[in-house]
Amino acid sequence: PAPGGGPPLAAVPWMPARGGNASLELASRPPAPAAINPWDVMLCVSGTAIACENAIVVAIICYSPTLRTPMFVLVGSLATADLLAGLGLILNFVFQYVIRSETVSLLTVGFLVASFAASVSSLLAITVDRYLSLYNALTYYSERTVLCIHTMLVGTWGVSLCLGLLPVLGWNCLHDRSACSVVRPLTKSNVTLLSASFFLIFIIMLHLYIEICKIVCRHAHQIALQQHFLTASHYVATKKGVSTLAIILGTFGASWLPFAIYCVVGDPDYPSVYTYATLLPATYNSMINPIIYAYRNQEIQRSMWVLFCGCFQSKVSFRSRSPSDV
Image (cartoon, rainbow, N blue to C red; front, side, top):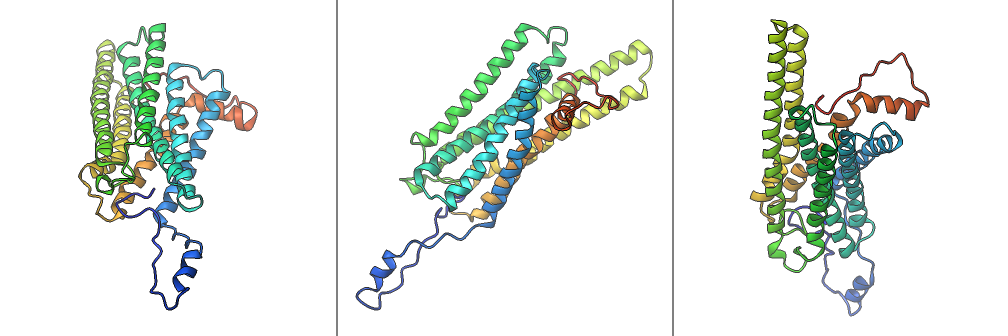
């Protein structure tokens, strides 16, 4: 299903008949293959990169018994969602140009909606986890935290699965073109619901990261009072932490906000290039997530040494990090 209001399949022009069998010959020919849209190629390439990056993260977390803490469970959930999103982009290209099937394409759309919804929801769960690790630092490593993490995971994937099933179960515009949104075959009301959900998640994440910044600055101030001055190292660490939080939230917003806004204000009659131009950066967020949340983590770096090198080089120093480390 192609983004935008245009037809997903290339139309075959019917030429005027010059003889009695002219139109019959044209009708008996196989349909001409659809011209490949460069935007669809870029989405497929993006999906391939996303799938490869996140497959490594999932393999590392599954391979390493030490990565079983709540923080890494949430990172694994994010990587799994992004991995599925990448595979969904690849399947969408295949079913659009290689294996044309309206039913299968609809299933692919639902798969993509569920995967990206799980990715965004996992980002919210990671933000909540980081906030709890700072706000309840003394009781973070308790059974209550584990129960909270599992509850968030069930809620994340349960809601995402429901959102993905909506277009499959009938909330689509296959039989009513006037109800189509800028992303066919999703309806206008469907993309409005998805965009509203994203705005709510973004506002919650913004609020939590502001609270995290307040806690970090408060901790730095308390350390300064205890030591009677704020050391340069504490100042640099605090500044680095706040700037990293800004980069995380800024990257997330820059990736998804344009597409979410366009889904609300866009019209299906607009050129599909507008949809592609806002959707492609949104997929880049799933490409950036493993870099921000996984590859920067020293525990995962150490596991990568073990997984790919077969041995751990003791001369490389690794420091165990808590969820609050950003």
